[in-house]
Image (cartoon, rainbow, N blue to C red; front, side, top):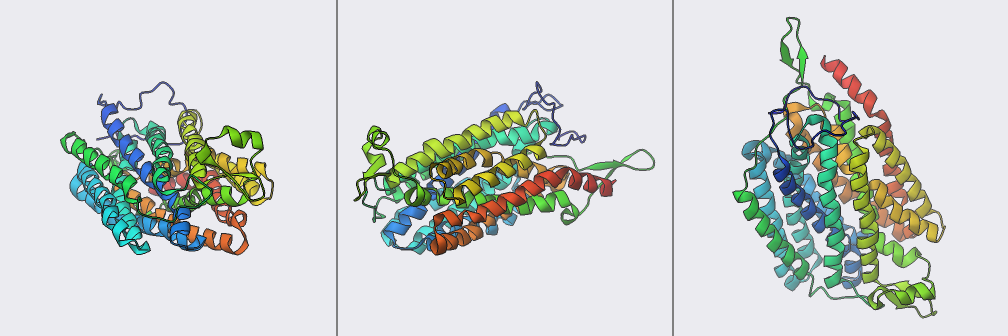
Length: 455
């Protein structure tokens, strides 16, 4: 059990303190590594989804809005499974919920084998939905679990380190998926015959992870419930309903808008490079691998779909991973809510650069946005569950359920792109980042008000 005296996750000055040793001397470094592998798995699966939009536009002849149903199926799995995941975690503990989650991920991955033979859009979406229900279990458990595997005041740092594994997975996903489904020439790939192959690999890896967690000791740690002093000097439980905790309620909203923005930017990355990236200089184009470049009819060089997926992996997600690592260190020096507010404003600025017709500056803005988005999900999560004690698992379910923003808002982004061009579609994430910046700036006041009412 974690000691009841919790410092706010916004507290700086944790430099030099162990991240994985609790007050009673327990070291949870090994189990933290195991949990980080779950984040890596989550990144791989979602990184592969980000290249499916463009592929299904070519193979199934659908428009951008219709292709956003890839994200809709994925994140609706999160929406429907989030609350049951919290119940499973409460009923079977962290280990039980992790094993259930891994089983569902494997089931969804292996479903792509028959789905490839069925060959219809709904069959692929069903596989993504099943896989997402498993990832929901893992997300619901892994995020709050990472915060308790060490001193409570370093929870925000620890969850950002764990989510760095997520960044690694996101780099792997587009490479793995793009290798099998995206074209390496100027002619688009219109076949789904090889789509099962990357998911077969995922299914095998997940099966091995399942066996690893089955034999691994996973302690069922908890935060102690918030307490306040009574008149006789004793400690009493301060159990306020979650919906009365404004710092938590707005965290749910902030997570909804963050996942909406992230999903939109990630999903339409390849589309933007195809439609709005300026022609490559001749010397630069010829220095790239042949599978990365295509010569247009007007004699100018452009990136292929597979080349765009490699830029997504090595470039954009490389910056995302760098942001996670540097952000983890920065959070040991600066307040988490301050970092969130600052990165929210900077992300808003990158969206403005994309919307404006600025050529290569717009492309720079697109890549830079990945760096500034990097710390948002885990930081919002950590700020949202702060001080909730035994309500943490329930609160985590609601915050994970907010991922449904990734199902709804990209449809709107795709509609904007179909109507007025891909560049204008980025208005959607711009508005989302504005709310996230607002939450960061407001968190200290909201949390202080919640503590005041609990006293």
